Image (cartoon, rainbow, N blue to C red; front, side, top):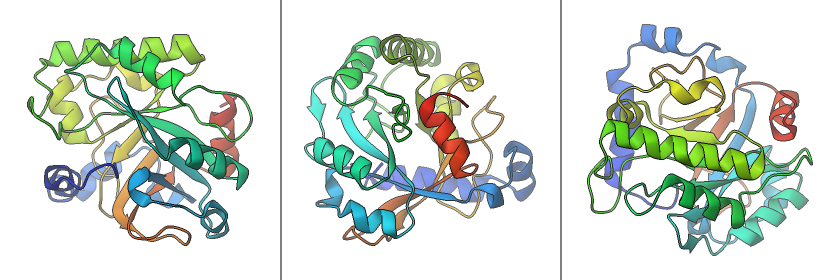
Length: 251
């Protein structure tokens, strides 16, 4: 996400371009990238002041906005961004950067739900996203957890978030991180939308067991009117009516 410019994260996301073949991309992506016609962004305080009216007028239809990290950090621009995006007509959702080595999944899910990650059926609020990626801090690539430990942590988060909000959280990840750190676990994909990070021309091979992607972060160096500097760009895999259905829990 845009909270960091970690070279490791950039290498992981872009490196999938080399590792995935075109054939694998076609097999793993159940619906073609051409169907992804709804553009979006994800932001944090690193984008500074955002003119959300300009963003919406530039054609951006949805945004994931950083809310929380770990157990004590709330993005200082979250409240402003979340309200302003809504008022500009942008369908928005919160996201939480996971720190699996500092507390239980339940603790972090509760922190998210209490600090911006709640949900309401208003046609503009998406279920929150759980951001799972390479550890940018000390503690190892997979936060020092075994694959079974990571599965338990993720399930604890997902169960708690659903209990608090009634929604299945979106999961943001890369294929390489997910397969390595969860042991190619396919458990969540029956209910939880996949937000795949791959900075390339196609989503590529998906995490083990995922039948399709719902969101695709395809670059970290996008440009959008109303935002100074680079911003992550995304697609929704469907049309606007289906995105609103996800927002309203009628999909």
